[in-house]
Image 1: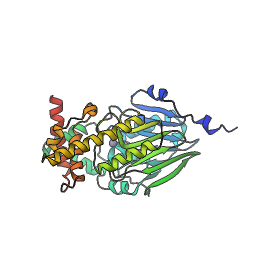
Image 2: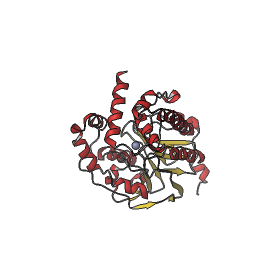
Image 3: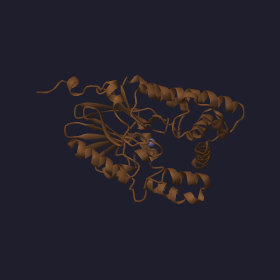
Image 4: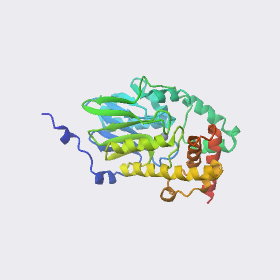
Length: 334
Ligand SMILES: [Zn+2]
């Protein structure tokens, strides 16, 4: 006898979500759907997801290096036989903490937006390893990079790019479970995608949501990220799996929208007053968002907003990293 879909996949109540602890590893969030969480969620400590059918599975994102990704795959195989057969991997975006582990899934279909696939070629793990080897010559920025990425190992990771790409939207099935890939970028990166399970009330947002941490705008425009938040909210899901941080409800996405709206207003005032992005970042009172982790990212976000305001060419990554290092040092000293 075939169970009715409603009986097979109950949408978890908010109370069930509240009971999910923020601990490392797999957490079942709907029948046959898991989030893989990596506290503390800071630089490089990303989340991933597993969506299963009877004898097939889809993986949402790999992790920053091969050891972490291997540990995650082992944990998945222990919890469900379907994880023996990961037929499909979806990369939500091109940052290495969501795709460098692809090398362990070279036999799977790997799907990303076309813009994401292009961006993945720009900073493969081998180039990241090179940047870290050069860190001692990069001043403050180098010290900061060496510190935040010290737990990870990028040497010897083979670049494994998507085998299929799409623009806009792609509808998939994992056995009889619909899975919708929605391109909502450019925002965090050029080709951000969220993964929506409409029958389960679940969205994997990738880094469109850093829960309880500051977002970082690598691409923008910021207004487009606000639009991405609205699209996620419009899906009506009850469980949000962020790219970093603990499991969330839609209120966290609404908070992020509020953060960007406040930051846009405050950055505009300081831009018009002639402050530099670093001066503005140090001056802005973030009110209800001031307690989020990685506050040094505010300067990168203010820089992105200045760019949106038409303020010349963007700074290079080393400059932005150097400014974040200054903010991080001040904050740890205060
Ligand atoms: Zn990330």
